[in-house]
Length: 307
Ligand SMILES: C[S@@+](CC[C@H](N)C(=O)[O-])C[C@H]1O[C@@H](n2cnc3c(N)ncnc32)[C@H](O)[C@@H]1O
Image (tube, rainbow, N blue to C red; front, side, top):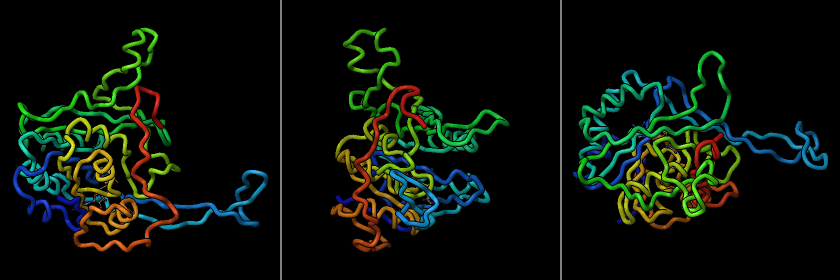
């Protein structure tokens, strides 16, 4: 079966997905921050009158390319999520897993909602994605982590591919001997990983884009080659990009045309994608960049790859 990317409201689309047909779901819904999430993209071009001075005194000016945004305010966040999570559970295969990405503001309410839908016995982990980037408030402990709640459909038969999970360096390799040091250690539920680098190849310009390294680890751990991975809050398509490099089939859904445009650029030249409700225009989205999905840094140990 082909990969698919849908433009539209996710509830009506996932309602049409067959029972127990999805192996892995990752979702990163809007965090209900009450803001419009936006990101302005800029580039610098050489100009005699430019306000920035670079190598050998060359002058550059900053040009705004565009702004991408989506609304992140819901009157009743949990009522918005609930029917979607009920559908998510229905369409997961018996061995399937849901990764639900959220932040500290809503995670406790979402945990209770997910416990009610999946059952507390199906709660596997709370993964903390810790990063160390951006401004630090001095009015409280600066929040520098996201929460990923992991639920399995059936506690006795979920996929968890220990041997496929990339190991991370020991903090003090000298203390464990050369063999162990070379093998690295098994990661815990706390993942230190940089945010998407602001000027790296991986960056699409879509607000709240998540790092490929996080999605790669999830896909390696909780799905097998040939499995179907679904992300129904797809944004820039990070889940699809990671699925593609790992030989998994993907289904992506978003209701923001800007997300579809970003995905059209990200997956330009990938033949095996069926677009539903949206027609990508070949060549229209490429700003001289190549394909973006092969640029993920590896996840590493505590403190060594963040910010
Ligand atoms: C936090 S972003 C996801 C970012 C994504 N993980 C990435 O790496 O780019 C949430 C996305 O959910 C989409 N969204 C919000 N409500 C939706 C709905 N009802 N149906 C489909 N997509 C929706 C927004 O347009 C936004 O792109």
